[in-house]
Image 1 (cartoon, rainbow, N blue to C red):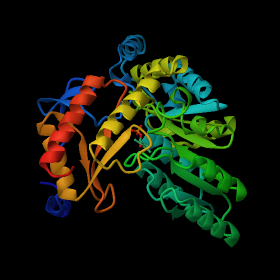
Image 2: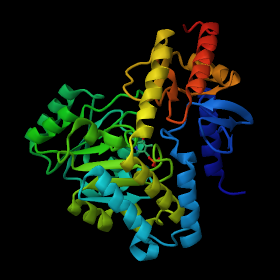
Image 3: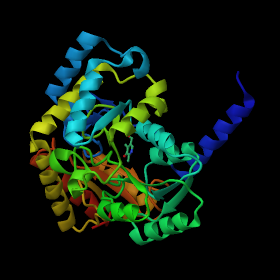
Image 4: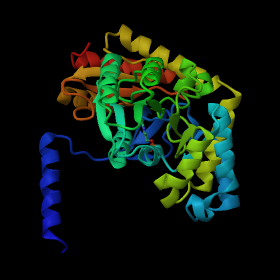
Length: 397
Ligand SMILES: *Cc1c(COP(=O)(O)O)cnc(C)c1O
């Protein structure tokens, strides 16, 4: 039977979600999540995955994962600090450090774990964190866990950041200051104003922490991230990246100084208390980093496809908001209409997720697209044709 108190709590809250229209069933994919895939039994063009470079389905990564699984087994068997550190984990960290041009890298099991473990290992209740109001949930959770004072600044608003940091600095109440931001914001596809953030940090003795989850494999030389994109080598102390999005596998990493990595190996709690990445995942991610280090071909194709798709949607009269990256929101405004638009696109053979409050502000509901290097121009043309048909039918364009 179980607890009646718990049961009542769950039922009441689930009912509330249903009443708000935000209760949902998960779309189920049969087979690979490629540029086309089968969702809920229907073949559609997929514009909703973070598989920017097509690495999730790349035969070279699949082969690397199989070989490593055969050699090392299905799991790592322990946390990194006991007997879970395999030579391929260390090789992955060395290759990533070269790729990022930092002294060191530490790999976690996910990007989420990176933020939870790193923010909480660096900041204490004597410190203050300046956090962009649109930062990812895992940054927010890491900040809370640290016990530091959290000072939110308006999204990408450098005047507000400067003013908030200056006040906190002059109050004399805090020991350390950290500015934390997503490198690329996942809902609008805009880029953090890192050069200004770095200058403001330097003015007030703060350090900078950038979460490049959506910038890894996308921005900068060969997709090496936002520090490369802006040429800010040596001026951003903590760089987080994921292996789960453009890299196509699963995992996350922190890149920075030798001392930062050393400290996280002793105080990064998910590193210490959660089992290491599987051998297959480590080997596949390693293969992806090798491919990226050698060639910018996939990154170039990604940007070429994104430009192509965005120009065509804009020309049709869709509002793409502030996007500067392959993340392409189509802003609809009304929540119910955005959800209906997404449903209608699906019926016509296109999967683009509808996103509404509270993920984005009220009145800014949208359908979000992520173009990838794996889409062909034919697929993108087909997607644009579906947008045109449904957009006209619903009176959006
Ligand atoms: C997706 C995302 C994460 C989480 O990364 P995972 O590797 O999927 O756990 C962290 N930060 C940002 C900004 C993200 O977009």
